[in-house]
Image (cartoon, rainbow, N blue to C red; front, side, top):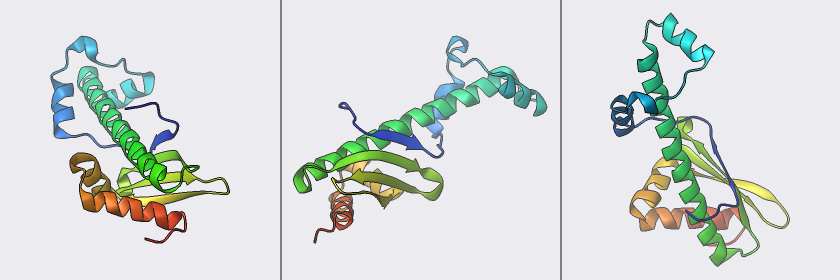
Length: 149
C-alpha cells in the first residue's frame, strides 16, 4: 500500500476461520496482555485468561485485515478520481461490516459527500478486480460528482 492521505474507520469487525485458527496456535508470548475489564469478563464467563487472550488476538487479526482492505479500496477509489476529478480526494473509508457496506467519503473543492457500496461489490473489486465491481464503483463516484455515465 502506498502512502494514504485518508482515514480508515471500522464500525465493527469480523474474524475469519483462518484468523481464529492462527490465534489459537499462536505462541503464548504473542498473546496480548489483557486489561482489567477483559480479565473480569474472562472470570465472569469462566474462561481462562489465555483462551480470552487468544480471542482478543483473533479480533486484532480481523481488524488488521479489514483496515488493510479499506485502505486498498480507498486507493482504488483514488485511481478512479485521477481519471475523473483531479482535484477530488478520498477523505475517509468506513468499513461498516454490520450493515454489509463500505462508505467512501470524498471531497471536492466545494463539498464533501459519501458514496456507499455493498460489501460484496468491494470484495469482488478487491479479491478479483472484477470489472463489474470496478464499473459500479466508477458509476457511484461519477454520480456523486454529478457526472453522467
